[in-house]
Amino acid sequence: MIQRIQSLYLALALIVCGLSFFFPYASYLGDTAYFQLSLTGFKDLSPDPTPAFSSYFTLPLLGFHLVVSFLILYVLAAYKNRTKQLQFMRFALLLCILYIGVLFFYTNFLIEKNLGIVSQYKLGSYFPLIILALIILANRAIGKDDKLVRSMDRLR
Image (tube, rainbow, N blue to C red; front, side, top):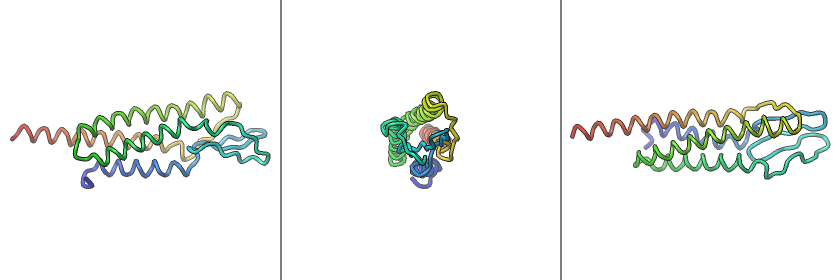
């Protein structure tokens, strides 16, 4: 399991998934408010805190993130069944793309258009893109492994 390169890609993707809980996605600085969007919710850092959004606002982000993380963990554990790995990695790839779309929909349309505040992207907003790249690399490596095993079966 650990000898294969896709295991390394998947382990790195899990590490990045874990790190994304600690870094904010974006910060918003307005005339009267300053808050940060993270995976766990909004953190109001203004001197006079007024709740701009409910804590349930980021539940879709958290949901997508957890499902992608669990799919990556499952694929990492199911190293003996390459066809299942490929199926679940394709599903994880689709969910990661939707996760990135929801994240940028939140930051660009819901917050910037409703409040009129321009977002400043932080380090956490690049983590889903890194996860997507690692999923693509792992998917390619699993496909190469599957192709190699199928070619060896033809020789027998």
